[in-house]
Length: 463
Image (tube, rainbow, N blue to C red):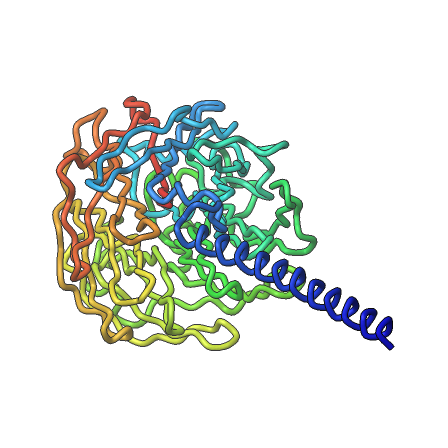
């Protein structure tokens, strides 16, 4: 009996030690997890989002039309808005830019040669895409932790048409607008198109079968692949705009061509596109507007589209009449007109909207201004500021940084009032608490591009 009790006592001690040791192990593991969690919260662990130090990096396309001369200009911006070139900048794209010199005046010209979204980055900010409009290719780069760019293997890739000008990325699908509107090349044997590519994990582009939609006639001039909710693409397509170089390229029929149209496409599951019937500008949109060919009628030019981030609304610039149009889109991407609102600048073009959908910004090419709209009622934008930009040149594309503290605007020489060799600049504006703008003291930054009327910097991305 004594032996049995002794054995029971020994077994109980073993059980007690077993549970005690396991409890220590469990507590130890819990403490490790807790410490690791605290370490992450304190910022000692590697952040989950890669390249978080890129929040102050800005890229601009030089758009140099000399052979292999196109490049991405990289900058780092400090909290005062000052810009410093990134090490290794400029980063060559391996192609040519897009020469938009109007032969009659010896100047680049606003209008059918314009574009939007010729440079984009993916959501993870790990890859950058840019067009080589003069050599019909797309450059693809991997973004390095310091903001530097390294071309992916095989870059640049054929764009699937002539004169690529705009890009949109929907997951692993890249859509390209091939404009077919280069005054230095014969474009009469080809047609503008929209086409899609698959983007592999290593950045290579592969055409999506049956994704190309051509436009007729060849003189149409698409400008933008505005991606909305990864489901639709919208574009403002220039039509009748009889510049001398366009008449020389397309003939007198360009004067009788159909007016500017808004095109819309639905992205199908297999990556192909379904096109809806294009729609013209609303009645009265160009009343009293610009008349380039002196035929007594204003030239109908629609350009610069942006989507509201929360409401099913698209905003479109009525360029030649200084008006902003509001459209609604349905579940299939079909558009219906809502209203027109005025703009105090001249030649309203590009649009940018903040993440909350409370402010819209427009660049007004004709008078070197930028406008701010209040979107408290998204269907009825109200202009609350029109700011004259510093420096020479005229404003084109723009982008907000991810924190929405700064707005960056690319400019270049467009009108004779800008001295030859000047105007290629990047303006930096601070966004105040009420969403209005104030240009920083060091702005504008003069861009290192050719000063012989060839280069025309286009496109900006701010991280």
